[in-house]
Image 1 (cartoon, helix red, strand yellow):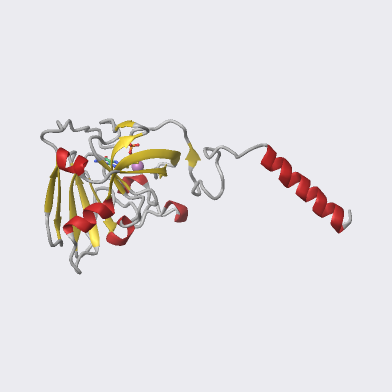
Image 2: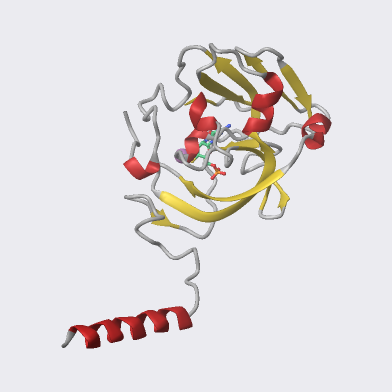
Length: 213
Ligand SMILES: Nc1nc2c(c(=O)[nH]1)N[C@H]1C(S)=C(S)[C@@H](COP(=O)(O)O)O[C@H]1N2
Ligand SMILES: [Mo]
């Protein structure tokens, strides 16, 4: 085949691809699905088996540690903060991924700006109402897709998925996002959380398959 004919054939092929329309984002793609993961369209529930029931009037989120202005937010306080929406992918270390999770909540950076962490703050340690803990380097929390999520797919976040409020850090494996979040502690030195002391990776990048330490 001559070069010109080859190029024409390629162009025709490309046009056909466009005519077929945009591929649905839920199709597994080598770029989007991290290595070793399988795509799922349902939403499995994974936790320690305790799903604490926290009435909204008793709920609070405290933000403390290496900060200039510690803060304890009631549910009403949290709702009064600017709310954002973000659609992101969810990767569980047990090898399932779910694309296009539609979250709504308060951006981590919003809280960050309010408490004004000191120069010493380098790590973030999350504690949840079920006793779960997890730790993340501060810089990983400052992406605009990191949320304290209270809504999922258009409705209030269910208790089984961590309601009333959970942390979402889409670029890391899902164990780094505390469901039922209760406290955010800014730390000068790292402190391992529940799974991290049990041998899970302290980095947790799904695209590097940082599953276990
Ligand atoms: N409070 C709390 N948060 C948690 C957990 C937990 O046991 N307790 N499990 C983590 C793990 S291992 C995963 S994979 C995700 C699961 O979130 P899902 O149940 O909404 O799928 O929550 C993470 N956050
Ligand atoms: Mo997990």
